[in-house]
Figure 1 (cartoon, rainbow, N blue to C red):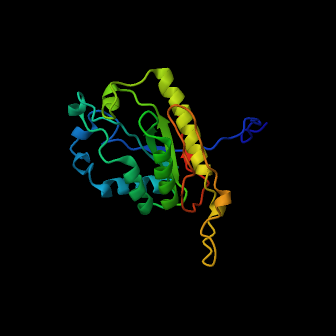
Figure 2 (cartoon, one colour; figure 1 turned 30 degrees about the horizontal axis):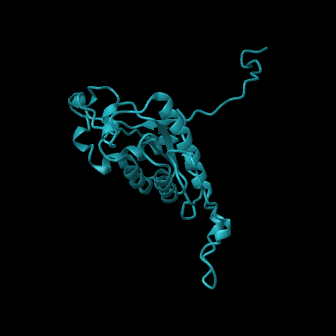
Figure 3 (tube, rainbow, N blue to C red; figure 1 turned 135 degrees about the vertical axis):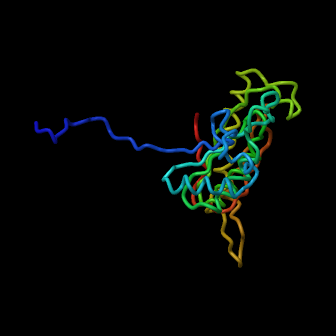
Length: 226
């Protein structure tokens, strides 16, 4: 075998996918203290637009914003965490970019499936099919208290709810097929026979109907598993 030949590698080559996890001024706890940090711009939407455009030019696949349901006190004095609400921010970023995926955290412990499905479907439609979601169950009692709870439910209960939450959300996205929208000016706007009604009898989800949504370039937002 000559030096410019390589043995056959039976392992299929897998593409590398790059995701920008944009968090505060950076993931180092002292990054915000640097003289050239962007700490003064964290509430400026143009800063996040610039980051998303840079990631898109760099051929990144996705732009990810984590979220928490409490400010993080004590500990917040050490540096910034999240500031702008991520789904609102990503919707703005969808207008500043053209190709990059837009992914946010949603907590199954505090959101209901219908609200999450509707908001994400809206982002997916506005962005031309670029929405993604990272489903979590949250980690602190402070987050739970902000949602009227005494504390976080037990681990097993949270993950059981997350499974149900995800299942219902996926079914809601599938409940309104694009073909149902006729927009026939001489007839019906929607073919109601194509809509799929959802009826869940579990304790955390009751009597959910179909989710109204506009046409999108993708069947549903993407789920980013951790």
